[in-house]
Each structure stands twice: as C-alpha cells, then as structure tokens.
Length: 353
Image (cartoon, rainbow, N blue to C red; front, side, top):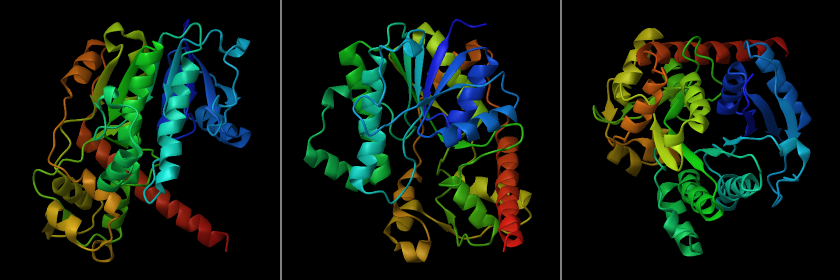
C-alpha cells in the first residue's frame, strides 16, 4: 500500500472521478470532498463499476464558507500528503459574481486550507490550457481589471485566468508547494470513450451528428487540442511524487490533435453524417450574431491558432512511461459514446412518458 493520502476537491466531476479511480488503482488512500452524501453515493457506484481498487472516504465540504466547513486540525487530515483541486464551474453564461465565487474564491480557500495540513507535500490545481501561466505578482486584481478581463475573455475564461494567478500567489505566500496542470479539452476515456461532459467541443460533435452544424468553424490552422480523461488523471496522479513538478506549470494536451475543421470532418465520416463544406474563419464568426451562428459567444475565444509549451509535460510523462493514446482513435470512441449516451437518454425519456 502507498503512504500517500490524497484529498480530492471536485471528486464527483467529469475529471474528478477519473482522478479518484486512478489514485485508488495506484493504492493511494483517497478522501473525496463532496457537497452532498448523494453525490458521493453516485461516485462510489461509478467507482465500483469502473474497476477501482476500493473506494474513497467521503468528506462533506461547503465552498461558500471561508474554512470550507472543515477543521484542518482534525485527525482526519493528519495523514493527507496531497491535495488535488479539480472543483469549479465549467459553464457559459454565468454572472461574473457567480464565476468569481466558483472559480476564484473557492480555489483560494482550498489553498489556504491546504497550507494548514501538517503532512502536505503538494497541492495540484487544475487550471486550463488557455489560461495557465498567469503572473502571481499581479494579484490581487483591482475591481476594474476583473470587470475588464471578464468582459474581454468571457466570464468563464476570465474567472479561470484570475484563479490561475490567485492560486499561485497564495500558495507562494503561504509556502505551499504546488503543481499547476493546464489541460486542453478533456474528452472521454481512451478505451471506451466514456464522458459525462457535453459542453464545448462535445456539443459541436452532437450538432454535427444531428445536422445542426451550419459550417465548420475556423481554418486549417485552428487548433482546439484535446486530452483523454484517463491520460489527464494519470498525469495528475504523477505530479505529487515528482520533485521537478514542484511550483511548476504543465500544459497537458495532445499536439497531434487535428485542426478543428479536419477533426469535425473526420468525425462526420466516422458517424456517417455529412459535414458542412463551408468554413467560417474564426474572426468572422466572432463578429456574427449568436442567433445566426448558434454558438455561445464565450466559446469563440477557444477558436485560436495558438500552440502551447507542451514539451515539459511530455518529458515528465514519458520519463514515467505515460504516453498519449492515438488521438484519432480516442476521438472516434468519444464521439461514439456521446451519440450512444444521448440516444439512450432520449429513449429512456420516451419510455417514461
């Protein structure tokens, strides 16, 4: 058995459940910080169906409270060696105050709580590939800057940018060793495609399947990278036991992800549906009214030709035998799962009427 004890915030989410499973498989003791007992029961049931090595210990948490509703001096936390924060709100159309509360204030509270744990060796915080690498020296943000950045980037992305800076700044000020993990769009499991996330790229895949995608967004350089859920979980589980990852940031994504129009064409062929022939450059798409494009304006900032500094993450992973699965195979399995899950949900809804 491992001497590691992981406390996971956000354990019941799309990424959190895969991370808990990976940690358990490695023999790590896991405490799952959850909002309700019901959500923990769903997690425990999911783990039992996914070959986890045992189950996690539940811990009720209240992110609205300054101390998370927890007592760090409690014996339950005496052996915690690592804290993983994958909690937060991934949603578009949020009010600025709600996004700040869910993605900034709650993350700062996790860092301050982690600083009080006597055996802690690492805090691992999930950030994002478009928001990572912020300057902690610029914290705290002025109210005017927050309003400006949230408007410029969109409320969700703006709150994640601020959170990235705040987590680093508070961790450095309190002496908390941290690792920032900046993943791309997290698709399903590389083996069977399973995913519970249907926002962002997933919604585009479902629109493609239903013939509701009017045009292919972007051009042949538009890069919306992906990473499979199980690869990301394995990378996060690796970070706390790697000394070089202390106080470092890693961009975790597959550089072999096809350009977005090519990706959608490939999936259209696989799903036996016709992909649109028309491509709309991202610059034009951002200027068109949402009623015409059908796209949430907050998602359009992800249509970029940018590339990211992936070499440190790849090097770290490969030193420990972790390699990306073939990305096109993973994308096809993910698309199959999304379509099958939606059809199953529709059938269940019809049957219950």
